[in-house]
Length: 248
Image (cartoon, rainbow, N blue to C red; front, side, top):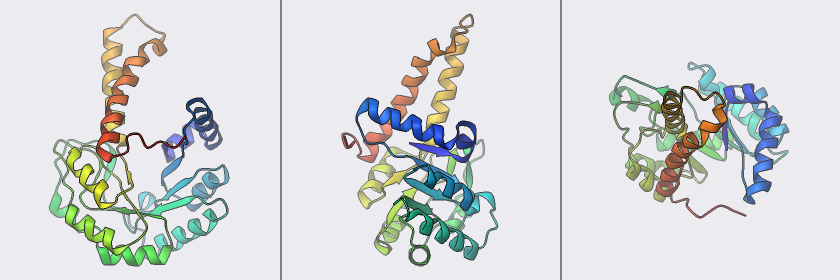
């Protein structure tokens, strides 16, 4: 389960932890929580304290101009703190564009390529920080765009060959599924598709509300919305090669 900094502020760290633990008991499968794009060391430490198993420290999200040295130093601080609970830490050396929303502009790949990861820089950053997961930039871009995204799979393979830690792809929404299938084979272990889920939720909710103008018990309308999101999730699970792999 993944929550953003904004969702944490809305729900509360302890409430999220309890909610996930309740579902673990209800469904009898192991579920972990990832704090996504946490902008400060302090926020990361609080999440570690309440038992989040995955922590994404993203200094460049809060400050796009943050230096590599600042990002490394703060990432190392989180990595060291996470050793107390065994939480896994994810990071990246720079901001690589987009936002978790629906965009109307097309993608300027010549500009985006300037922020692509390189095998050499990836290896250096991983060794300097000691992170468990590296967030690679190979054409993935936060949010949904009017054109499909294109991943540089050859570059992704070279990054995979350069490091032994896990690799994640942020900004997976709006990406043709065949890229995910190949990325999983290369060795990517985490792909973010939150915008695809949010889009399905919003659009289906708008439809259900329009179709039921006299129903004010909104909870009665939600099963159709849930089904729309479930269809997105199931499609991605199959593309990622993750079907049937839940740990009970």
